Length: 254
Image 1 (tube, one colour):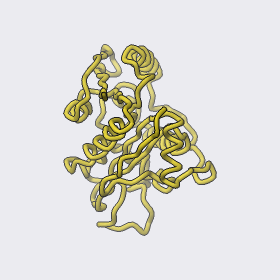
Image 2 (tube, rainbow, N blue to C red):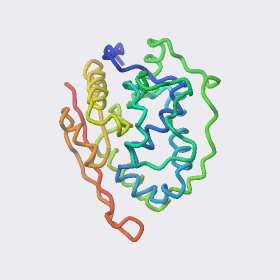
Image 3 (cartoon, rainbow, N blue to C red):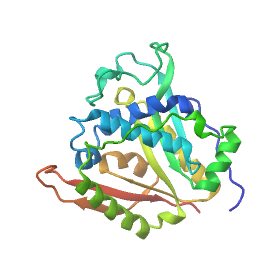
């Protein structure tokens, strides 16, 4: 592997830190409430919002703990009314995922991107950023009850996606694993800014990039130069009559 390079981070983008984890869990829930993915394999989440939040908190801890991931956040001025601008369900008492001393107008994470670059590239990233994350810095992972999950839907989705990733050569790519923006901050191009940094990472390191997602989220990737490779569909049933559709897209570099 040639020398690994890191594009400069644009204004308003920074690496995620352990102190961001409560906020990251909330951002995932606030955004994924609107995703067809959630309706398909987490259909019981409105009854068990604490289970979905616990899952995304655990994922956030793993992303910061595992060196194969680069995790960035985009910041913006806190909108004190942000809770009223999402229809997502949160456990009782969960508000912003921020400290008590944070006030309206303070710069806080409003979007996040997770890029799976592999262990070697990820370790170089952490060393370059001076942020070698020790397990002791991270909170304990919450108990996962997963009462919100439809296991049959989840297994069916996972099996089809795994085969499609193999056909599309994901083993030679970095993967844009997650991209979310809190609905209160939609339309401010935070997601676009994060994706463009990820694509610049691919260009300077001459490594292609893959992404998997439903059509509603795929538009931003296709607009930035990803090319659709496959479509996947799952038939509806009594739990989720509309079924599920997803796409795989790849960004190739010379």
